[in-house]
Length: 151
Length: 151
DNA sequence: CAAAGATAGTTAGGCAACCTAACTACCCCG
DNA sequence: CGGGGTAGTTAGGTTGCCTAACTATCTTTG
Image 1 (tube, chains in turn red, blue, brown, yellow):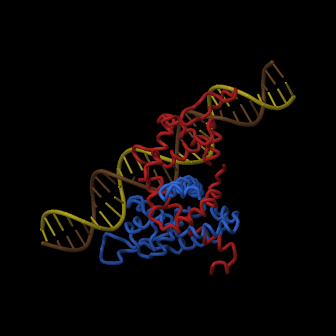
Image 2 (spheres, chains in turn purple, brown, green, orange):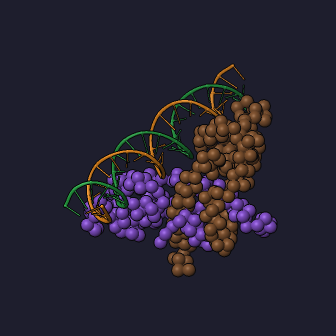
Image 3 (cartoon, each protein chain N blue to C red):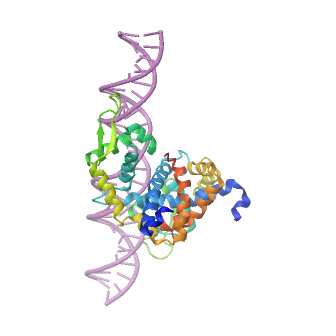
């Protein structure tokens, strides 16, 4: 608790300094594990997001995932080419936008990834003792908040 | 606690599924904030690592930071060009390796970044309520462990 | 109701951080 | 002193991200 003597600002600063390298390193590993025959962590995240909001549009999804529209457009193109999601013609009468939905094979790929236990992050989590995992579970809310995740 | 009914494996799996998107999104933001006139989060992390182990070599640093040697080599080159660190001639008699040390201006840049409070992560942390920050503080150890950080 | 402006999505061009393979230069051991 | 290992770099490619600029389609409004 020595840090609190310096006031909340120093406290936050120290926490940020501790979190930054850990987060950078973890995400490096996370992005690295592109299973040759499965979904990358990013793909899985995007498919999950689409599954959660069937019929979402590219722009809306970009905003949810906090990327630019062109970036999301490219991801969608890739995922569509892989057959993991489909574009439905306009849900409204607006001919500019499509509704994105996960395809049957996308859902299958997602389930397969979830069933398989050879994932880097899962392996790391499994290696921790239960108290450490509980601490992470408690931190999940705040982390999501920092990430700016909306329902 | 419903998840625990499915056993520890499902538990870990659910935690991983929750953490993955949050971590990916946070790191996206983190990597984005390249302050035009200061250190990027990556640069700050690397300089700190070098400062913590004066005289470290490129390979050793690569291993510590969990990147390939060429990747680290390139970072070092960039940081050296920016004047933030220096290579000392061999600390031993081994002419293959150099000892890396942070320069005066590197240390100054690091201090300046720490003093400035306009950092993305710090701002996000400051916006959380104290309990959430405490949860993150508790999670810092486990996160560092996942990241494979060594002393 | 047509022109002007706003919005959905794409294309084009670039950058940063990563990787593997292959190379140079050096060390050390038998 | 020759051969195998190690430190570091070079070369070449991938991924994920960005901004600017464009097309096509609404929507507003004078």
